[in-house]
Image 1 (tube, rainbow, N blue to C red):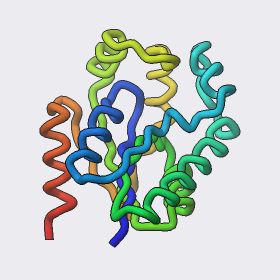
Image 2 (image 1 turned 60 degrees about the vertical axis):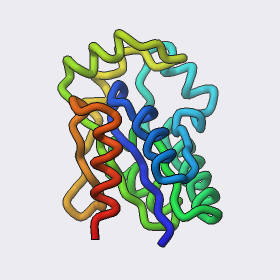
Image 3 (image 1 turned 30 degrees about the horizontal axis):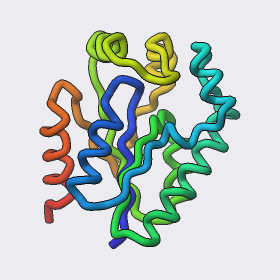
Image 4 (image 1 turned 45 degrees about the vertical axis):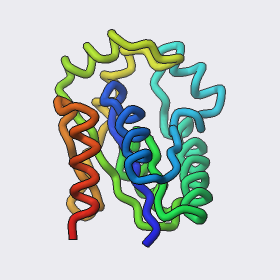
Length: 168
């Protein structure tokens, strides 16, 4: 069965680190959701302005289409995307046209802020954490999802995801 695995959550949770490692572990392609943002979104975020729904819809559709294209040629694909709202996840599921698992990486606000202040990102300032936390809608019980605490190491998170998706 073909599958898309989308590593989701607010900034600072380690989506890229976990996503890249999981894709390597599974031997499937990896797509960095941030690379699908149009220049206008990047400039808005760089200026510390949160994206709104109008900014996000074209980005989500583009990422979803890219995931669908990759999954046509591979058994699975791993992608990253904040996927903060149920409607965004629904859009991605519709666009991918395949079995889609969302893996929510979550953590304490103070830990996430510390991580953001210790890293360099080409456009995502730590000031956007609050708006992302306010926007985040946790996956509902009817959504195919896992929720993992980022206090665990990236290696442990990848192992846990692998164990859970590989379980009979």
